[in-house]
Length: 338
Image (cartoon, rainbow, N blue to C red):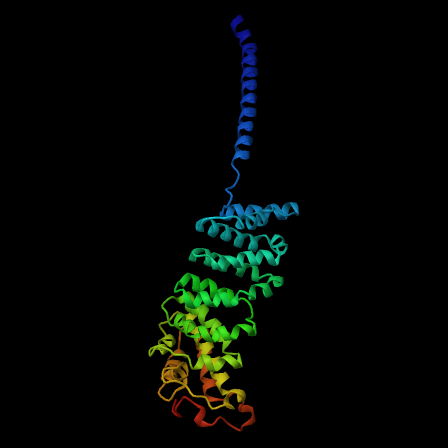
């Protein structure tokens, strides 16, 4: 019985010892965790989306800058190898998109620094620099500064045959209006843009056709586009087997060309085109564009159907049809039966 009476006391002592040990262990583990947390800082050029997102959350929570974007820009000024520069630029791009207030606090000198990376020998650095400039172009105050790099971007697109570089460069150019001082360079690179359009890389083709569609609305560039040399199979771009996204953009391009060449301003001059020009492929006497358009009227995608109809209408009726009682047959690419 005496043993039984002593057990509860002994159990209390044991519980106390265990509690003390557990408490000491918990404090030690906490110390280890804090120590490990201090040591385990994110890598200098971390491109982890989680890392960048954490910075954005911190900014929102505390209402202050994390300093990450400024740190990355400062590190870009140091001498780095190509891989490190690419990773830094990639991280800067993410920061510009996610840390809006920090990006807005940047200066034109920062944009110039990024633009200087376009002269790097490594294509991957050029591509990342183009992506970063596109990110900065979303901020209005930087657009004029970024426009200064337009000629360099066009030079890269026309002299380096790299699909990823084409996509990055064309996305940048499509993100802001191109100033008039770039037009002479645009004339020089028009053949390269047309080659990209006729390549087999869909993403690059879509970006090229978007740029060409915008340029087709410039009176001083329209003839250069229409007289540009194209492959004999150019109309394959209008085949129903092409991806809908590309087909739609090609049809928008055709509509704008048709409207442009039918405008009074353009028709006031008698233009001459070479036999293998875009004009002859689309609007020449031997063009089969009408057949392709009629096939697209029943395309599965409604956007493509509608745009094909718009091109047909633009081909049949000149833009200044309002001053005439009807559309003269001579301006139509379609037979009466069609």
